Image 1 (cartoon, protein in one colour):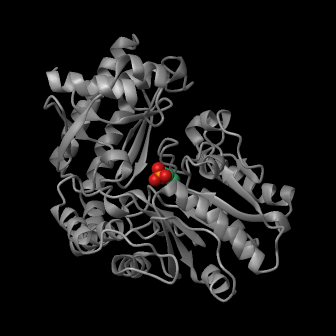
Image 2 (cartoon, protein in one colour):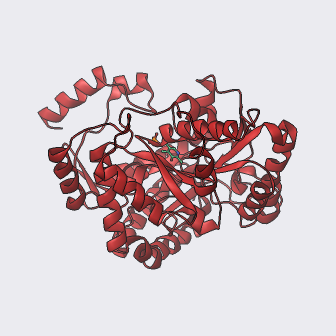
Image 3 (cartoon, protein in one colour):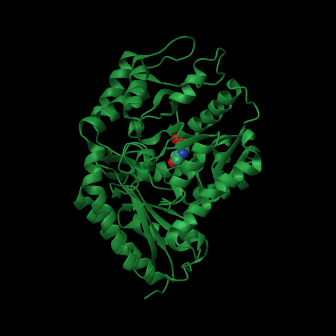
Amino acid sequence: MSADTRKLRELDRRHHLHPFTDFKDYSERGGRIVSRAQHIYIYDSDGNRMLDGMSGLWCCNLGYSQQGIVDAITRQLRELPYYNNFFQCSNQPAVELAGQLVDVAPAGFSRVFFTNSGSEANDTNLRLVHRYYDCLGKPHKKHIISRRNAYHGSTIAAASLGGMKAMHEQTRGLDYVHHIAQPHWFEAGTDEDPDTFGMRVARELEQKIDELGEDNVAAFIAEPVQGAGGVIVPPDSYWPEVQRICSERDILFIADEVICGFGRTGRWFGSQTYGLNPDLITFAKAVTNGYMPLGGVLVSDGVADVLTTHAGEFAHGLTYSGHPASCAAGLATLGILREGNIIEKAAADVAPHFQSRLREFTQHRIVGEVRGLGMFAAVELVRDKHSRERLAPDAAAAVYCRNTCNEIGLMVRQTGDAMIMAPPLVCDTNEIDSLIDMLSEALDKTAAHYGVI
Ligand SMILES: *Cc1c(COP(=O)(O)O)cnc(C)c1O
């Protein structure tokens, strides 16, 4: 380790509190200083290279070398580094990005509210749906239904919406948010076939609406594919049934597309992949390719018509809503995605290769399930494929496997007992093969470590 690295690590350990991190452990051990990145590779301060199998945090879908985005940000900073969108003001990048987002969104979306993050966008969703029903003279409609093990961000509202057990244990959540089951067939360990299971958990939405009273429920929120929860691809029966319920009942449907949006599932939005008709779409992460913070809510015509024909101020906003440099980054990102047909090309070429190579691991002795679509996937680790007995308690085996991947040069993530991957859309098939080779080596080492031969 170089002297510079040692110094940085020391400062980091002493002064920097990291997100979703065990403070005690980190203060003692420190972490990796990432100092540069190129294409799909990150380099630490000692020059070690890793293939980034997570696109940063599900956001650098175009990798790290998009000079066009960097140029757009710097040009904008020279021209107008900041102005707010309050008080009857607007700015060119925000206006143009709103227009372009409406262009690429599913049909029937006409408005955009900008935030700096996905969490703030979901907070905004709560404000918007409450305002919507207030405008309609239905002020009792305040309750929100979400799902266990969902991830919707980490502000108080977003953590309440999410269904992460550890977050709820550390947060006093909002009392008007309720959770139903997630469509995670493998985890449920049920005897039902996936479609019977999917139908049953979809109908929990209907039951919850009846239990709370339809007159009290404002919205259902869900990720088309749960990302942080473990790339949970629902059974085929699930979404059509949920969509039926949302259409029959007077509630709004919020699709949290913070991970699914901008190509991850093979289409621009996961809602298109699954034929969903949401009323609101949350976006963030890949909208700027991760180069600048930006999130927001896409608002459908039906909701927008009510909101924009009612007088009275919407009392919500952020200092940096529609920040010109972030919006310039968004415009450049959409430009690259559209002009290069990146989403269509990845869906036709590298994504099928990624998914089929990963399916080879279904034969591996410690793999219980491989699931995924488009450019993200999960591999569940087990000791026994049939009983689904895990290799070790507390997800220790997946942590071991992740650490092994990291040591051999592959950045992936672990959620529970699943290994999670979401490589950039700009990978080629050779790069996917090298990701597969490293994962394969780590799986073998994990099997050996836990005595499975
Ligand atoms: C990351 C994420 C969020 C939160 O976004 P931040 O920008 O981290 O606040 C919300 N929803 C989903 C589905 C996410 O993956």
